[in-house]
Every structure is written in structure tokens, then in C-alpha cells.
Length: 208
Image (cartoon, rainbow, N blue to C red; front, side, top):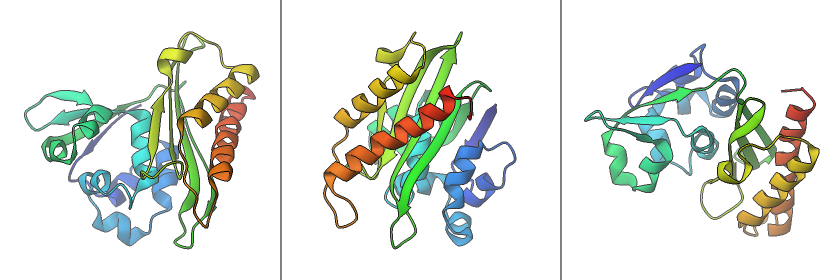
């Protein structure tokens, strides 16, 4: 599945596309029609605190970003260069295979009807072995979202229940949740691990 999103496209236009991956559709569904209709794609990636799950999902996929002058770069690399670099963003290209896993789980909602914790996993296979594994999450640090690439450590391994536990523990080690009235550091870390295992368990059992 190949999908191109332009910087000026509204989130509502993206949400209405039939070729949008179901996981991204589910994430955008949490925003109101007005929010989607009034927000262009470029604005949404700038406004990380307003669209954290959307940003986390894009970071997990890490699509190819095309700049105004025609250069191409990984989306994450563009974000790492700072807000100014986004001025040159023309479009992003998502390229997902049918065997790829893109899944989303969340815990509860805030008073503003947003997830307290959410996890998005992007998993690409090559000959039934892990080729790429990126996990993005909200509510697990002071930032709007965090994304960790485990591809180097997990490449060439077969996903099973033992590896699932190892991935969950590894993810819990790298996140730095903060205490708030909606969830302690311990709770957020533990629930993030639970969500990772929930997604991977479904994949192992053939439910995704």
C-alpha cells in the first residue's frame, strides 16, 4: 500500500481517504470533525501536543519525506532537524506491505477525551523474520510522544511469546514517564508494557 500525503492536505481529507491504513484512521477518528477540517497536515505535525497520537503513528511508520527542492529524507530525520526544517516539507510517502503490522492500543481517556497512554507498533517482516520494529507511545515522557527504533536489535528474529516479553521489557526500560494526577510513573510504565504485549500477542495468535 502506497499513500502520499501533501503538506497542505487537511486531516479531514486524509481521514476520508479509502487508502488510509485502518490504524491511522482510528487515530484520526478521535479528533473532532472541526479539528480535522481546520488542520492541515503540516500544522498537525508541528502541533505535537494537539495531535500526539497522530504524530506517534507517523513516527512509528517513518515515511519518506519529500522537500520542496525534491530531496528525500526519512520523516524522523526531518523532525530531528527542528521546526524550521518542516517549512520545506512538500509531502510524505507511506509504503506499507500487506504483511506489515501497524497497530494501536490505548488506556482510558483524559477529561479532554484523549488517551492517558497509547502505543503504536510498526513491524515489518522479511521471510517471516523481523526486519523493522519501531514503537511509539504517548503519555510515557514529558514530550508529546516518544518513538524508539528496535530494528537493529530485533532484525532477523522470529516473533514469539518469549521475544514479545523481551520487547516489552526493553521498551519499558527506555521510556521515562512522569507522575501526574492521572497516572503515576510506575502505572504508566507498566501499562505501556501491557499495551506492547497486547499488540504483539494478537499478532502471534493471528488476530492481527
